[in-house]
Length: 471
Image 1 (cartoon, rainbow, N blue to C red):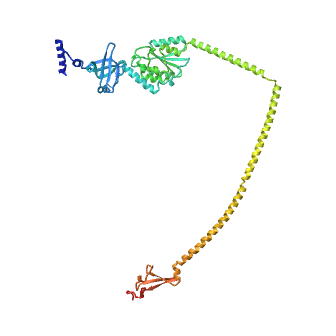
Image 2 (spheres, rainbow, N blue to C red):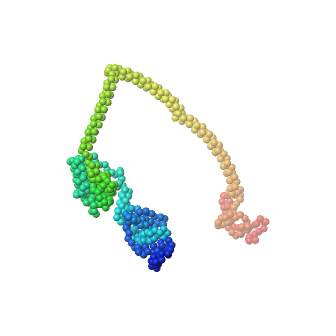
Image 3 (cartoon, one colour):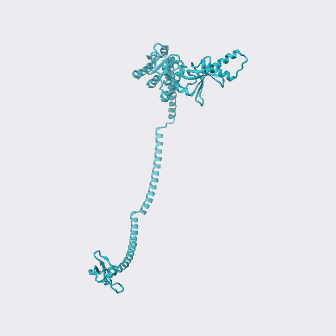
């Protein structure tokens, strides 16, 4: 890099010695960049941000300007984390960087390495952030605003005791409605302690005078943005919102607008205007009362004339008492006749309905229904008895046949015809064939009327021969 810078100096020296030497645009631009980076490698520059933009690359591109000039600047994405802020148009910033040249366009620029907010821009950023946060909490909601009394008896003024604001307020109140009670809470209206003193005065007024004071005027004369800073503090906004007494904010000039103005129940452009808003003029009140009195008198006159006209109309239509009595008597007789006729028609209709219901009830008499059901039960009982008798005889016949077949298959019946059954001892299993007998063993012979123990002496098979094992 040092060699490049030395080359740039040599080229410039040669060009001065040799006027016929021709450079390319790229050579000149590169040499200018090297010279700038060599002489302005680390510079601090303060200015106002304008034309701020962030393309897809994420780098910050903007211009720094003052009253006389402007300078293009770039802050690459890798250096933004250290800054911790994202400037906007109108912010005043202090930048540390190096001057360089963007060769494709031949534009010199500041490559920003560090950035910090300065002055009005930082204060405005804090003001906007606080305003958004308090608005989200509902401190500025219109439905939370309280109305200012038309004729207050006692007004509290929170302001500097030595400023022009308190004198203007007292002069307006004295001129418009002399005799109104005014209590001044002296506070500091600028500086580091001002916000705490103002909020403390609001809390103190509500704690000791909430049942006596009808309105609070929070006032300050004009000044710079820094002078009005206490009225942009969060503690002041929350104290105004917590006040049970309506608060009128009169801070600065008509063009000034603070957080206190947003939180207050009513904003006045100046302290004098606040006094005029909270205190009606005695002449205005007298004129308004006179106007209301005239309107009330006109309404009463109109109402009285209407009532007189109606009374006259009613008097014209009022008849003599005996004629009115005769007509009402005739009307009563007519109504009595119509009532008697209506009663007779109603009675006849009810009698007809009763006759129909009586016939229907006779048709649905439970005794008749029970007698019919009893006959049905008796008929079904006789049918059931006949069916049961028939089925019983049928089952009895089948039972006799089954008993005869069972008796024919009964082994005891066979024994009663003179046969016997041999059973092997001692387990008394039946012997089904002579070949299964062994001479000398004992068997039991079962008869129809008993059994006998027998000894096998000889076994004769079906062919008439003797068993070889027999004796």
